[in-house]
Image (cartoon, rainbow, N blue to C red; front, side, top):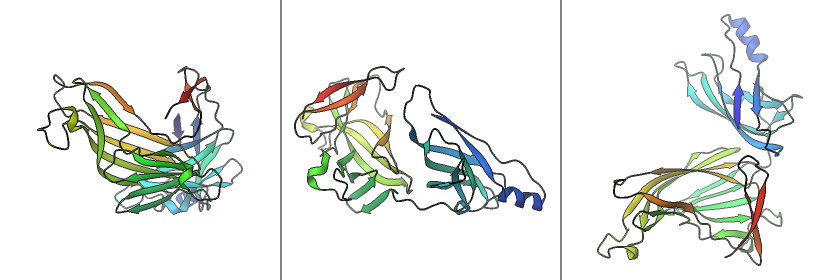
Length: 290
């Protein structure tokens, strides 16, 4: 999905600048692929500003075509030499039959904001009726639960993924299976509408698969940096995986790179997968076996 956002025009006189600020109405243009049937989707876009025009993102919000304020998140990503806004990052959930504008107003309160709890053990995040639990030292979120009865709590029988800390794996040219182990876990973007959890670690094969004399951590296959994107009102997570090759590629390359989530499912469960790149809504179903 691509987005276009019109910037602000240039004004030199103070009176004209004040009027522009009061009448601010920047269109946010959504470009949805025609083949995509969804009616709503989380939107992220950058908005530039001229030097000295605005100083505080708290003065800005997103409104729809009727002028109704929309729950949003606006973060300053760059500033001019005088401290005024240069670039901002705007996040909100868009309905594709609506038009949206960035304007000068206070952002409304929302009931479905992302909740984050950090502790020495890791990070717990709640969004869209889902709870993700990250543990330090792991290479993925360890557990995923869904609030199936809608009571706002997450009980043990509502867990659908458990023990997933070693879910990311690689198989190298020597047939060794490396599992991602986390070295660093942090909240890179802490927002109510869009949160990013960053995990950095190393793929290491299990010592029992190679030379017992090797270091107990196993041999390193590669390094990875993973970004987990969460959006308010959505139980889904968008995962961006950056694989960094650290070894001699004349001696080591990869046969397989994957994510194997251990699901906690009772009875026969089926998952849906896309089977046509040109038709996003075309799917086939396959039974999941624990």
